[in-house]
Structures are given as C-alpha cells and as structure tokens.
Amino acid sequence: MLDNLWAGFAAFADPTYLTLAVAGVVLGTLVGVLPGIGPIGAMSVLLGMTTQLGPAGSLILFAGIYFGSTYGGSTTSILLNVPGEASSVVTALDGHEMTKRGRSGPALTIAAVSSFVAGTVAIFGLMMFAPWLSGVAVKLGPPEYAALCLAGLLLLAALSSGSTAKAVVMICAGLAIGTVGIDPAGGDLRFTFGSDALAEGFSFIALVMGVFGIAEALTLAGRRWRPEPVRAPKLRELLPSRQESRDAAPAALRGSATGFLLGLVPGPAAVLSTFASYVTERKISKRPEKFGAGAVQGVAGPEAANNAAAGAAFIPLLVLGIPFAPTMALVLAALLLNGVVPGPTFVDDQPELFWTVIAAMYIANFMLLVLNLPMVGLLTRLLAIPPQALMPFVIGLCIVGVYAEGNSMFDVVVMLIAGLLGFLLRRSGFSMAPFVLAVVLQPTLEGSLRQTLAYSDGDPGYLLGRPVAMVILALVVVAVALSTRRALRARKEQRLAARREANDAPGP
Image 1 (cartoon, rainbow, N blue to C red):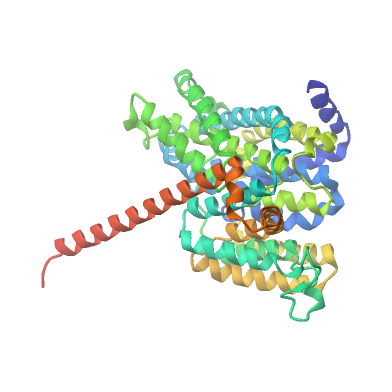
Image 2: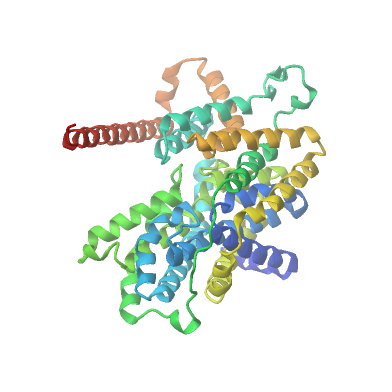
C-alpha cells in the first residue's frame, strides 16, 4: 500500500497534475466563498473540458474543487454570517458569534485545522477501505445494485430539506429523461418522436450545465445584492488560545468520525453530518449554554464533519460506481466521458489512477491549509464583487463547453431550455439534485432491474434469497417512514401554532 501511495505521489512530478491540483483548490475556495455558485455549478461548467484533461486530470481538478469549496464556505459563515455552502450553515451559529467577540482569527484557524484533520482522516479511510470494499462489492449481483440505486434515490428524497413529494417528482422526471434514446436491450428507439438528434438521448453535460449553470445565473441576476462590510483578521490574530485549542481538538476528531460514517450514506451527507456533529457536541458538553454564543466546539465539530463526509463520498462512487450525491454524479460523468467506468474492479483495473487520486487528495488537503489562512484578506475582498458581474462569463463558458463537447447546436438549445426550466422549478421549491442523480443512475437501475427480473422469471420471492438486497430495502423503508413521521409531526406543530395564534388574536 505504501509503495502504491508513493507511486501516486511520484505522478506529481508531472507539472500538469500539480497545476491542476492548485487550480482546483483555488477555484474551489473561490466558489465556496462566493455565495450562490457552489461546487456543482463550477464542476458543471468545466465538465466539457474533462475530455482534454484525461481521467486523472479530471479527478484531480474536481477533487480539488470539491475539497476547496467545503473549506471556502466557512470563511463567509464566520466573518459575515453568510454561509457560502449549505454545509457551512451550522458553522455560522458559533463562528460568527466568535467574530462579534473579536475572535474571528481563531475561529478561522480552528475551522481550517479541523477541516485538514478531517480531510486527512477521510482520505486515509478511503485508502484503507476502498480496496477491501471492492472485494465485497464484486460479490454483489443485479438485485443488490438495483436496491442500492433505489436506496440512493429514495434516501435523497427522504433526507432533503425541502418537500419530499417534490423531490420524488424530480426523481421521476430524471428517470424519464434517462430513458430517451436507444433501448439498451432491444435496440429500439424510445421517446425520440422521430428526432435523429435524440437517438443517443439527451446530453448529460447539456442538462447539468442548464439546471445548475444557466439556472444559477438567472437566479443570481434577479437577486438584490449589497456589499457587506468586513474586516479580515491579521496574521498575528489567527492563533487560538491554549484553551480554545484544547476544546477544539476532541470535537474535530469526533466530527471527523461522524462525517466519515455519514458520507457513506446516500443523500446530502455533508449537510446532515454538520447538524449531527453539532447536536453531539452540545449534548456531551458540560456547558451547553455556550453553544450559539461562540463555542469553539460548534466550529471545530461541524467543519470537520463536512470535510470528512466530502472525502468519504468518493468510496461508493469508486467502489460501486454509484454516486450518492450530485457532486459525485458529476465526477462519475467526467470519468465516463474519458472511458473509465468505476465499480468493484476499479481499484484492480486502474491502480495508477486510483493511487494518483489518493495522492492528489492529500496534496489538495495540505494546499488548502497552507493557502487559506494567508489568503483570508484576499478572499474577503472578493466579497465586494457583485455575483451578477460573473454571470455573463459563466453563461459564456456553459455555451462554449456544451458546443465543444458534441459540436451540436441542439445540445446548446437543450441546455438553455433546461436552464430556464431549472430556474422556474427552483423558484417553485423544487431541488435539482434528485433530478441529476436520477439521470445518472437510470441506466444502472434499469439494467439491474431487467437482469433481476430475468433471473427470477418475474417471481418477487427471488429477493427473499438475497439477504443483502432485503436489508438495503428494509433500511430504505425505515428511513422513509421516519422522514414521513417527521414531516407529519412538523405539519401538526405548524397547525397547532397557527391555531394558538388565532386564539390569542384580539377580537374585533
């Protein structure tokens, strides 16, 4: 293992890989700092370039963006109480309170060091467990893969922060879009309506750039913006006190473990892990009243959790070939565009690529620690740039990227229509993440279901002899039931609150 890891680091003697690693972490930090863009938007815009970068270069660039965005989101949360990413919302609770007390420097340092520790733990876990899990995954059959795909989609719908019903609608829309084109079993054309351009289905790059890139540009264009005054801490103000360091260290380790475990679960793991870590730290603290008033554990734990979840998310993608998050769906698309199909044999078939990516993650994690703290002043000054000023550049990149990928104006039209629909659906409360994940998983889900039905001759009792598939489906049923119960309880509480307000209202 050490020899393989050393070979992965040796690949960075190629200056191209090192340049891509630096570009990835810097770009990821920028999109994490600037509210609204995010890693999904950045990856979707760059997806068309991945065929020129190759599989290793694409993974290095996207891993750097993914890790960098989780780092960068904490900066605006702490300094401005404006989370750059959804996974940084919890950090703002205590991080901004520390800023109000003049402790923004230690808060930023604790967030950066906790993220570095968690990233290192997650990469080590990926390095240790991925080869072992590959051996387990080889024994899985079509029923297990069908169950995993269903688990990923249903858990994403159940655990989403918005409406579960709307998430299910977007999943169905994604599965329907994925069926357009040639039937992989019979070779017949499906839902093309006589159009030759649809014979190969909709371009995934066009769809993703539309629902994330174009839709994000339209959303930001209509948003009112005003610069927030902020003072960046000086370098000498970054060091935390000895007591703050003692309080933060165990919280960072606990957050790393929590984030790594939740990163293996389908759904918005990075967001869920931050809330789980915050709740855990508050429950075990001897002074829970400090949380929400500037507790360093409330910064260290969640920041460690979201970075550990980001690293762990690569395990199901590389080992099973199944993305459990929208960002991983884009990483999968980059690999598929380069002719690389991740799965149970990926580690054995592509050892050089796997270990080069592991080395890239270590390098990116270290770069982020070294670069982020000295760059705090520059990053805060970037917040004075109106996001609307960047949108024409983003739209231009999307159009060029989609056209260059397929040399087709039809794909450009698809992207623009998808962007307009994505913008309208967002305004109506629909999330695009379930849609994209459904489009990616549709071929695997359809193929696995067909093989399962062929093996079982249509007998549902066949699944009873597949304990792994049954366990996966049972866990999904439990998760969906708990989510439904939570939603019903929240609705009941809202009705009771509205009734109390009506009773307390003064009469005419």
